[in-house]
Amino acid sequence: MNFSPAIEDLIQALRCLPGVGPKSAQRMTLHLLERDRAGADNLAAALLDAVNKVDHCQRCRNFTELDICEICIDPRRDTSIICVVETPADVLAVEMSGSFKGIYYVLMGHLSPIDGIGPEEIGLDRFHRRVVEEGVSEVILATNPTVEGEATAYYLIDLLQGDGVKVSRIAHGVPLGGELEYVDGSTLAHALTGRRQVE
Image 1: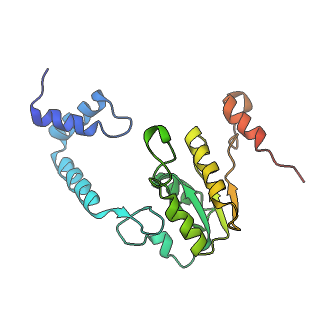
Image 2 (image 1 turned 180 degrees about the vertical axis):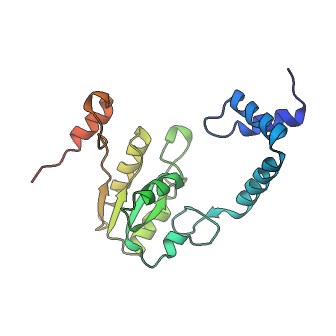
Image 3 (image 1 turned 30 degrees about the vertical axis):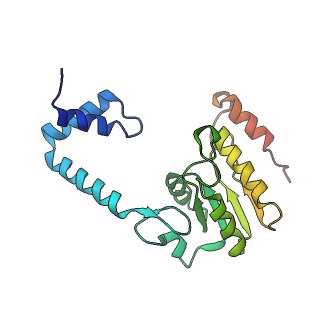
């Protein structure tokens, strides 16, 4: 069955969302048009509003409607510790843990030469200047445990050598409550290599 051009355009537009294939996009489109036109209007207005108002924080590159985000201007945060993450979703994950009181730097990606993403594209020159100029004492690398995330972390370690900054990497490995038989081999290997001495 062929839909009208407007319906086809909406189906194709919804497919840009992660995890949304052709069938899901079609179901969402038909639901909005059949049962929830008011919801469709609200969705369109909220999406347009966010696209027009949300930009990047001038200090940490996280999403915000302000020039400097709420985390960066919070006087209760420890500005001498910066946690480097790949995406704004990573900031939310760390914040939900409630265990980090420093500030962030959001790369908006990771190094991937094959995709043409180098240090400039993820703002590493800006980040390095900030670390040096603001007298940061510790940088926590919280990039993902993927090949690209690890390459980005190693690049940052090299970049910060000689700056007198403590560089640490978040631990990866077996989750609390996890059973070894269900942990994949690469995660287990990473956990073994990152082991610490018990005192």
